[in-house]
Image (tube, rainbow, N blue to C red; front, side, top):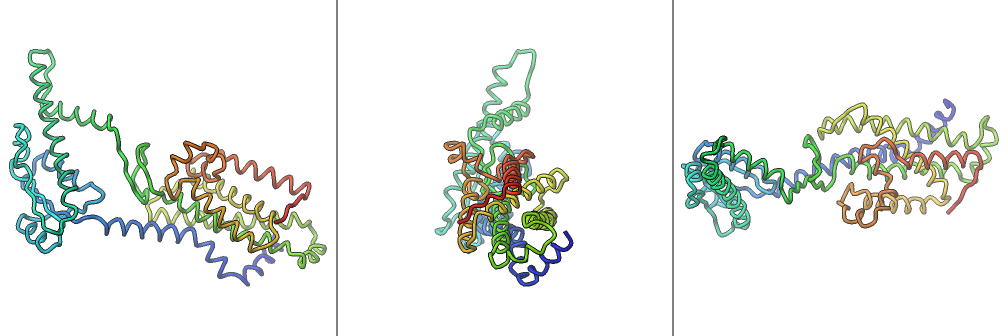
Length: 375
């Protein structure tokens, strides 16, 4: 093993730049894409001024709901600042939650609750206004319902307060939502729920980039099988196949160390969870990727053909895995695509990966029988 490692170091010395690039490519590429898309998402948010004239529970709740809207960047201003900034187009529009908002809501008064400022260039005013109106209507609807329930329950043994009825109505609304979709570019510290739709996640994006880099790093399988190099294998004290398998082990150890470093960097920069269970999943994934790339490399003699096929395979994995773009409609129609997806177990945090079993069996057959196919 030491002699093989020394031989491998000689090869790496001649191509250290390309090797270093492909080793760092998945990690750096993922971090750059996540940071870039997050910056674009933040810059694309519409600046909207909000004036909160009273600090009551209903008014504060309305303010926080508006603030959580992903396409709006809420700017806290006074009424004078709101009017000036809308006129100078620093804000798209401004909305004032007026004094007495909660009192009017509780009385069922729906008029003159929100005041707004707009300009000729307020392109997002209409959708923002409609959103705020719908939120106000929810408050008035819950309050009206609470009064009706109170009237119906008069004389019964159990009396519910207005506040209790409103809280219960909110709980039912959360449980019975017909549609709740949260789009995000990075998981970060947000918890994943079954209703969330994620454009891509950190490890999914990394897995696709890692699949491409692994395939390109494993071009050594083709380079080491050039006819001009076969004469040297006669002087080795172990077989050619043992030489290749020991090189596979060396690459697996090195790439897994890189993967652990990646996990730490994702934990620091992208707030990804770092646990022992995840390290085990990462090792299984690395072993799967390396054995797959090794077997694919055995099928080819021409390095350019191998490179072309590697990019095609990476693109295919990106499409069927759903790591880059949602593919729920595709996989629901063609369920067999999940079987072909080598990232399925890793992305779903499943320890059992059928791909690793297939790869190990094929390598064992290759080791014992020595049957090779070439392209």
